[in-house]
Image 1 (spheres, helix red, strand yellow):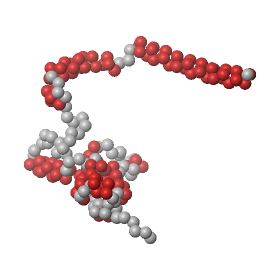
Image 2 (cartoon, one colour):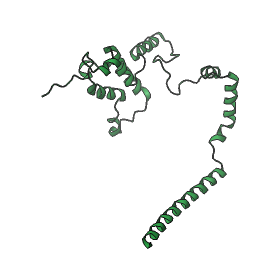
Image 3 (spheres, helix red, strand yellow):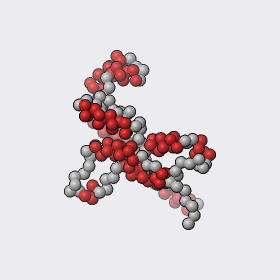
Image 4 (cartoon, helix red, strand yellow):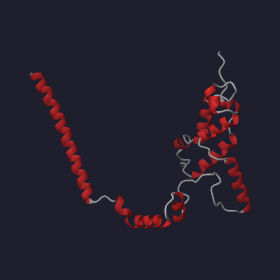
Length: 194
């Protein structure tokens, strides 16, 4: 059997980081009930599954890697950091989990995300923060927000005229399609007559 290169999973796998991420991933509460076992068994932690597959395919870091890889990953630490980012693990989840556990033991409530990035739909910034982030005047942001709250439903509502226009456009597109087929048919018939 030819020498096969060592793969990453044989040498290193970030078990602690994967554990924290899979625990965070499974805390969403979106699991099916146990009486639906066919769905329940198919639910695997995505981060852990991706890590196992990728680490089984990627080579282990060594100084004998091709030059292109060594220029991108000059050290084993840079290779491991890239692997974690590839899995979507940003920051240091182990330190974040330790911080959360410490705060929970002390009775401190969480003010910001210890993961180093905001989680979706959990943060509602003030107008001043939005203005600062996008280099706008706070007054402009306030006016835009007020206008949207007053006229937002109009933007997403389809009027009766819009529905009639859409119906007319559909009818015309069908007519054009039929005429195109008829023209092609007549061209074929004329070419056979010549």
